[in-house]
Image (cartoon, rainbow, N blue to C red):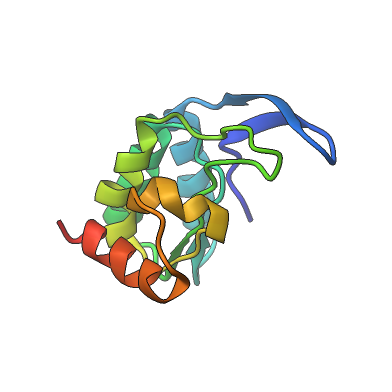
Length: 132
């Protein structure tokens, strides 16, 4: 099952536009699925803005949803932003601490960590940021 957080207008080469759903609708989708069946794990994708990141973090904590994998989708392959700038800190402060695993694509790790990191230090950098 999945919860839709945003709708994109995209082709194989670009994202032309996107619109985020209201956070309450994202939460309603998550809670509806969690009420219907046992949740073994949760994985995020494009969360679009700070309000959705905050809402997802709150519902994960409140419901005790297990094994959260956070894939911070921030930039499309073609370079288009898929996340409001203000949401980057929300990932680090609110969602990363709930995560079992954080899986940014290598080019996307810089907005999370605030610096270009070598592959061997990225995980430690992101972990340290999430515990501040």
